[in-house]
Image (cartoon, rainbow, N blue to C red; front, side, top):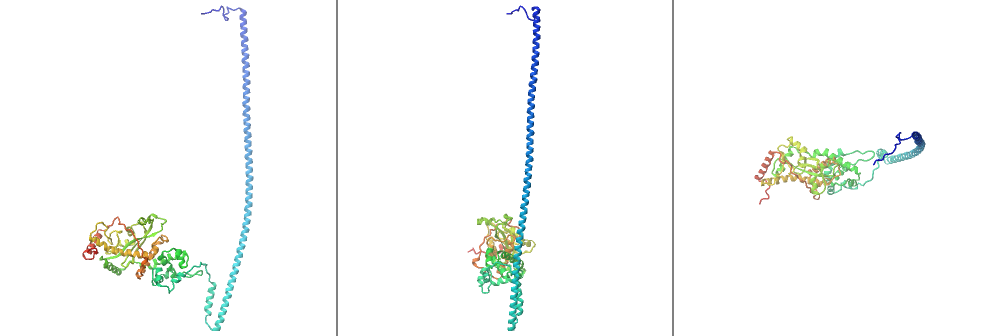
Length: 525
């Protein structure tokens, strides 16, 4: 439904002129008011903006002022701290200088007092020495005067001897030496000491001991000095031999002979070195041609095997675990058998029918088998040069069969001929083992780990072998209680047959032993 107004305000036709004017005026007034209101609003906004900007500027100024104040305070604090630190440093330096000067003054005073005391003591000592010399000279003068009086009365001729002896006694100086008892050695060195007791202590008779002393006197003897008398040759040799024979520690050797421990140790090494240099070329050497023929005849007489010039065996000497190459000296076989870690060095020896060593090789590590020790020895080098051509050296199952080394059969199933051959070879091999048994039984130092250094041990072992030869050559019997049972494992080498000709020769020897009634068939009825 639509309503139609009778008039419209904008329609000029519907309004009167006054009304129209009134309306225009009202419009103008309204515009004016709106403009005034807008002006007032802009003024108010400008004032508000001015107020806000002033607040912000004022806040920034306050913050900057605070920062400047803090920076000034921090700068002042740093300057104050640096000043205090400088003052403290200067004070410490001043205190240090004061203490150093005071210490220097104190030390100078102490040194001065000490020097005065030393000078005082030296002066007293010199005065005392002068007084002693003066007293000795007076005593000597009195003694000479009395001797002259006695000579003039009795008419004797002892004046010259007294005058020669007195000055030497008065001018001789002595070095302080600890007093040790030498009663045991003086008793052993006495001519009345029983030979059996001497042999029990030194493993040899007095005659053999005197022989060794005479052989070594030119090398071992020392001259007396103004400070002390030299140890006599017999005592030097006795220290070494008793140490080798008993294997006792050096402290016990020191008590027995009345010498220092270090002196005994040096004497043992010196005498062993002299034995190696002087006696070894004479008593331990390869025999000459005439002696070799005698050795061949002796071996053939009880074995039936001809051209045998020696019996060879390798034994082990126990040592303390070395500091270097420990694995090389480790003896696995002895360790497994004794259930104790063992280290050793090897001694390879060739002996004649009497058990006298004709060749030795000492010092290779205990881990090496017998065949490797043989290959590194001088014996092997001489054999390669043809020195043993046409001769046999009999060894055990630990050695390979070569043109000059004769060993037993090692296979499992042996014939009667091979059994007989092995029996004869065993007799020859037993001579070398028996020689090493007497060697270790006579010299007790070889039965246990020694205190000697590893580099000095070959010299000591060589001296033992030389002394063994001297005793064997002079028929020095060994006491039955001193026999030492030892056991050496023999390992079959990897290459046990190294010569086809040697294998044929061995078969021929075994055949001849059986068919010439020389085989060991004692097991037959």
